[in-house]
Image (cartoon, rainbow, N blue to C red; front, side, top):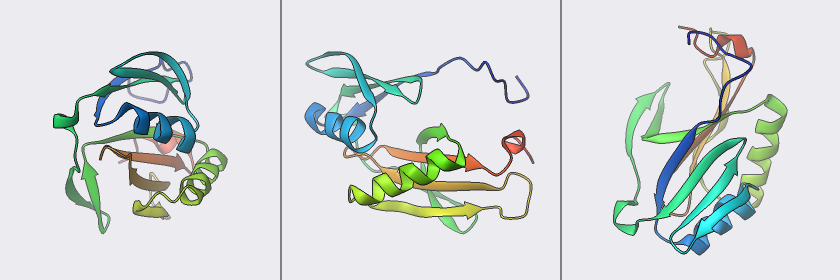
Length: 144
């Protein structure tokens, strides 16, 4: 698919966490995701309409590598969602209010250029890096 499709299907992503209770605190309380099915060693989350599963795998957790992008050290790997600008601002405020440290503070990247976007990065409690974005013009999602 080469353009943004309004009927995009949900993705499924399974990530490691080092503590299920802390995963529930982060994804449920901090991000406000609804919990779905679960067992002792995993939890399904409604991650903005996508299926995120946190699996207990403490040996697989930890802070990511970083690559330079637009003057910032971007964590790799990372994942997240493209939100509306209003939802992005609300999430930035919520994350800050919960005391989560930003790896990259909420800001506008590529200002005045194709693909202008608001972005922020932070880690969950197991060291998984998340990025949330919002575009000035969503049709610029894949602009070069």
